Structures are given as structure tokens and as C-alpha cells.
Amino acid sequence: MKKATLTQWVKCSIAIILYLLFLVWIQSWWGLIVVPFIFDAYITRKVPWSFWRKSDNIAFRSIMSWIDAIVFALVAVYFVNIYIFQNYQIPSSSLEKSLLVGDYLYVSKMSYGPRVPNTPLSMPLAQHTLPILNSKSYIEWPQWPYKRVKGLGKVKHDDIVVFNFPAGDTVALNYQETDFYSLAYDMGKSIYPHKINMDSLSRKDQQTVYQLYYAAGRKLILSDPQKYGKVVYRPVDRRENYVKRCLGLPGDTLKIVNGQVYINNKISPNPENLQFNYFVQTTGPYIPEDMFRELGISMADQVLMTGEAGYEPGLAQMGFDGRNSQGSLNPVYHLPLTKKMYETFTANKRLVHKIIMEPEEYAGQLYPQNLYTKWDRDNYGPIWIPAKGATIKLTEDNLPIYERCIHAYEGNTLEQKADGIYINGIKTDKYTFKMDYYWMMGDNRHNSADSRYWGFVPEDHIVGKPIVVWLSLDKDRGWFDGKIRWNRIFKWVH
Image (cartoon, rainbow, N blue to C red; front, side, top):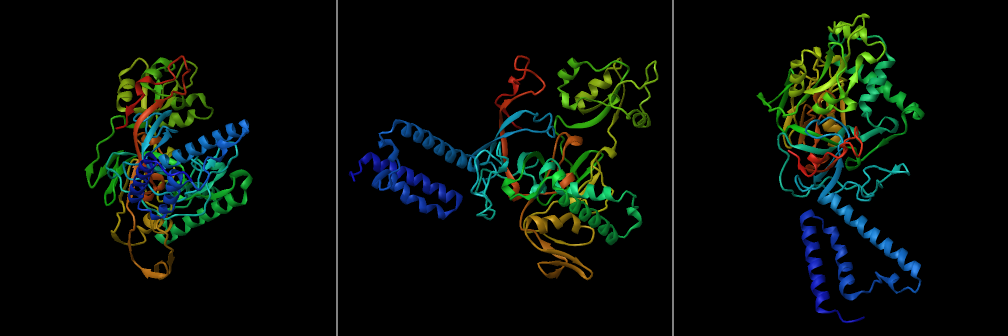
């Protein structure tokens, strides 16, 4: 063994000091087992780390150099993705026009503090499924408990946040875009075609009906894997990534009145590009493509209702009365519109005959599905958002709201018996929350699957904060027709 040079000692010292500072930051002393390997790599060199460099076989050296580079890159990407930042693509229009479909974001893990991974043995750049192989991208063992490293700040009102989908713990693989619980409830409800008058039932009987729907739907899904796919469980950090705006913080009381969100009885400022769905009927002509482009309405959002068979009676019942000389309804579009877009259409009397906001029956089942509330997506709550350390009194009316927090997110057993509520086998009417929770909603209010549909986001599901759009591609345009949205490149996310 050659005697180490001063340069080697300096490099070794810097590497070990930086690594120890990293361990102090993440508060994980298991990492100390790596220190001897760092020392050996720089000083003692007992382990032949670069044995392949001495081989006489040129092909072997070439292959090993590639393997060495790939392994180093994967390890670097793994740690950068976990602790520094992660690339994220906007897949849906729930935050239009604040963020657009096709935006590529850098998501800062430092903003709220990176999480130590629940599933440390996973493939970098693959959230839960390996491409091509179509298999899991992670090994479920070991599973580490939730721990978050100190970050630069905390989630604030109106922050745009990336988080793991809370209802994505159970997934039917052929229906991954629908959360399992909503799918099971809808399938179960379809089995019982007769409509039940929930107003005439007691709270206990209402709960029985919901349990019946869910149990029947779950049984149906599990019995038909060919149609629904295999039903799998995913750890917290392997669940689908969602991005929404945080409207409610831990301890807040939120309600929605006629589409306006209130926090603690005060109006929550609306995003500049807040959108709602409308039906727009023209005076006869079709809306020109140039107008759609100018307003920024994507092709996916341009739904011509009168182009579909069987829609005319419903549209006529809704109040659309503009007809052509043949007696058919003039074109009716289903469009998400900002206030500015709405004003543009209403001002164009030559083109637009009538605009009506999308009726409530177009919305899905709201959270909690097992509580009959008469809430709708534009008139919701009030609902209190759980805060760490806060204690609530449990009742028949609020248990369905908080039972998922108590059971699924905080790991308690929860039972409702004839004589009361039992948590971890002990009868009680109180519960103290172990985590903070958040209320997330999209700016595209009628096109957003958000907390109104699946509930609270626990703190251990928070991934990070989008910082900047580094690339934006318009899927409706070609490469020589404005596909790259140059005005959004390196645009800060507000």
C-alpha cells in the first residue's frame, strides 16, 4: 500500500465532513457505516474499487466504464430526487391556467423539508412502475417510518404543492385514474338500481347503506381482475404524484359558498385564472379555432355537445333554445372558462347566444362518501381541517369525515359498535391527531379531482413545492407551429 499524499488526505477530510453534515441534516446515524468506505476509497484502498481499469481486455474495460458511470449517475439522481429536487410533468388541467398541461417543473424538496423515503430500495425516476417491464419499481422491504428533514419553510395558504395522492393507497391497475374507494362505491351503487331516499333514513341506516354499496363494489372489483386489473397496495411515497393549490391549513375551517372559498369565515382570495365549466351556445356558426387559440382553450377542453347523439333533449331542458332552420339546436360547447374568457364570450353578441354554468349533476360523489350531507362542489362544508395535537369529540356526524385520518393515515384500529366508538380496542369519544393535514384544490374548479372528492392530505404525503417551469410543450401544436411555449420557459411558479 502506497503512503497517502497530502492531497488525498485533504480530499478525504472534505468528503467525510460533507457526508457527516449531511447525516446531521437528515438525522440518520445509520449512515456512519459508510464512513470507513469513504476513508478506504481515498486513503487505505484495501477494496479494489477500480479493479477493471487494470484489465488487459479493452472490451471489458469499456463495458465496466459505462457500468461505473451509470451506477454513479443512478446513485446521484437517487439522492438528488429524494433530498434536493425532482422533475415533474403536469398531466391534467386541474390547475389551468396557472399551470398548463405539458409544463415540466422543478419541484423543490427543500422548501418544506425532504422526506426520508418510506421505501428506500427503489429505482430512480420511476414512481411506482417500471416502463416496458410494467412491474413495480420498488421493493416493499424495508419500510421506514415517516420522518421529514428540516426545510426552508412550511406550506402556506395558496401555495401550489406536489403531494402523493392520499386515496392512492389501494389501486385497481386497470382503473388507476379513479381512486379505488370511489370506484367501489359507484360499482356497488350500480348493483342496486332502485333509488333510496336518504332523507327518510336515520344516520345509522345511512351508514349501513353506504357500507352496503362499498362492500358490494369491492367484492365485484376483486372478483373480476380481467376487467378491473389486479388490486394492489402502494406505500405513501410510491403513490401517484398530484399537484394542487393549498387552500386550507391545519386548524382552519373551510367552506365553499356558490363557488367562493371561505377560510375561517373570511373570503379566500381567488387565483387570477380561476376557471369554472360552462355551456356556450352560439348564434349558429362554430367557434373558430383562432379564437380558441387566442383564449388558450386546448383541444381536449373543446367539447361540442351538439356533435354527440342524444344530448339535445338535455340541453333543451337546460334552457338552450337557439335553433337553425332545420329545427336542430345551434352548436353548444362545454368549456372551462376564466372570468376574462367568460367576459370575452358574453361581449361577442354576434357569435354567442347563451352561456349557462355547468349544473351540479355533472359532479361526482363528494367526500366523505359515507356521510349524507347535501353538500355539492360549489357549496361545501363547513369542514374543520385536522391539526397535529388537536383533540376533537367524535360523533356520528363527524366520524365519517375523520375516520380515514384515524385509521388509514395514522394507523389505528377503529370500530363502531352498538355501544360506541372503539379506537385500538378502547371505547372513547375523543381523538388527538398525530399529524397536520391540508386541503388541496385545483384552480380549474369543475375539472379538478381534489380534496372535495377524496379529503385531507396528510403531512407525510407532502412532496415539495414547484419552483420553476423549465420546459412547456403544447400537445395541440406541431414542432414548427408553436409546440414549445417559449414564453413559459424558466417561468417562476407563483
